[in-house]
Structures are given as structure tokens and as C-alpha cells.
Image 1: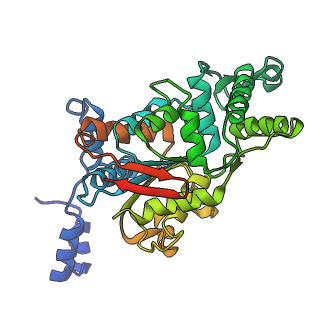
Image 2: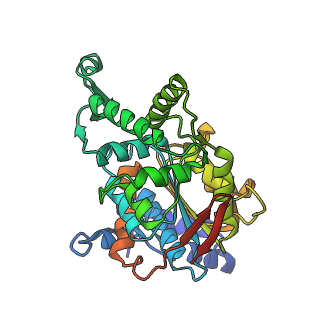
Length: 364
């Protein structure tokens, strides 16, 4: 070609394309980005598979799905712990989470009290409703309607559920309970097949809520406590030391552990702490997180999984991934990929046998 422009020819003369540089270039330019083909990607599984060859957060989400897949296929049968925080029930994830319990792809839950309370509220026949973040909240207050960003809940239903929890508490034997045991008994009072608490009770999945007082469950507990004091009734006690001991026993009896973090806060830190709480020093072998926060603010919710390595909470050789997206988008895609790929089929459930002094037996 008799080109008028010789820029590249001149530039090439300046390039130092040594054999070493050529080999490094080949290694780095090995895998091209492939565009999503919507004629072929017709299922969640197809879409997530195609994202493995894409970029930005789509690839990150696919990497999280792959970490989860490896976690479930590991021959050592890791104990999978999932932390739940954020407005997940108001955002529509209740059935996604309960399906994870039903299908045996999560073994232990650690949750905020708000998520568990709103699961209970729904199991009691109440609903969340589509609203708007631009509502006049003074008007909502006068109508006894509470707002969770763009969702509404029935304040009257909340008060009734507070009373129902107080009534439930009044029937408990006055002794020390871990939150795991308390929530197991609370789940036994429900019959909603889509309920997280009910399915955790049904399938024996431990649910821990280390900050249970910071929720509407805590409001129900306060109502019960006032009633007990006024009537001079001996109360039961929620014992956080038992919580720590129980979850640490689960970690100690597991060959490996894997962690899933939806959001951050107390549930994320609690699962991290469980890895170093007693004599276990290996850290979680697998970890992935869905977060909408950034690490540079220094908060736990956005903190990287590499940062957790410095604490020994995630293994230095852990398979790990993070996707920066909102949970109501990210979690259904990852779980849909796992279920559509059939990774739940044939997976052995863990049978937990509890006694007064803690975990008596874990059968894999």
C-alpha cells in the first residue's frame, strides 16, 4: 500500500519489541472480550456464562457465581455461611433467600433483625407495597404507613407483629437462649412455605442474629420485658456468648468454610469473626460479596476480601470475588445461575444436633 501517512512505520522503529516483550504481550492479549449474544443467552445461566467473557461488573458478577459454584462442588463439603443485610425483603428477595435454604445451597444464616422481622411480618399475612421515594413522609406518618425507600409497609401490621412476638416470648421457658435457638422456636410457629425463618426451622439451618435488639424483634422483646417486670414474671435471656460459642463450634467442626456477604454491617463482620473466634486460624476458603459500597470510605460494608486476609478471616489462598451492584439485582442472577445449572442437586445437607451446652453433632 502506497500510504501517505508513515506514522506507524516511524513509531515501530521506536518500539522495543524484544522476544520477551512479544511473549508478555501475547500472554496479556490472550482472551478477547466477547459481546453478549442475546440470541443465544436466553436463560439466567446463559447470561451469566456469557458475562464470564465480558467486562466491568458483569464479569465480576460471573466471577462471584463461579466462586459459589466451586464452593458447592468442593469435595471437602465446605460449610456455607451467608450474611444478610439491607432492605432485602422490601426489595423482593424473600423467596430467593428461602429457596437457597430449601435447595440446600446455604448452611448457616447470619442476618440483621430487620430482615428476619420483615420475613415474620410477611409470614403473618402482611405485605410490602410499591411506593415512591418522593412520598410526603408526614402524610405517610399520619396514615400509619412506614416507608423503606420506594416500598411501603403497614404500621398497624408491624404493631400487631410486635405484640405477637411479645406473646411468643411469654411462652418461652425462662432460661438462657442463643439467638439461634430463639429464632428456631420462632420459625416453628410459622407455616409459610416462602418464609426464611420457617424454612430454616424446617430444614435445620441455623440462623444467628447478633444484633437482634436493633430491630422490630427488639421492640417485641422490649414489650415482653416490660410485661414481665410489671407482672414479676421471670424472663428468659438472650445470651450473645452462646451465639459466639455456637457459630465457632460450627467453624471448628467444618473441614472448610465458605462465606457469602450480601451487603455488610454486623452479619458480614460476624461471619468474618467466626473464622478466628476460637482455635480456627485457616480463614474462609471461599468468599464472595455483593456490595454497593466502596472500600475507600473505610467501612466494613465496602471493605475488600483481601483486607479480610490481613485479619486471618479469609484464607490467604481463598477463592474470592466481589461484585459492586445492588443486591436485588445481583443475588437473583447468581442464585438463578446456580439453580439452573443444577448445582444443588444431590448436595448433602448438614444435620446439626444441638444440646444445652452447644453443638453436639454435625453430620455431613
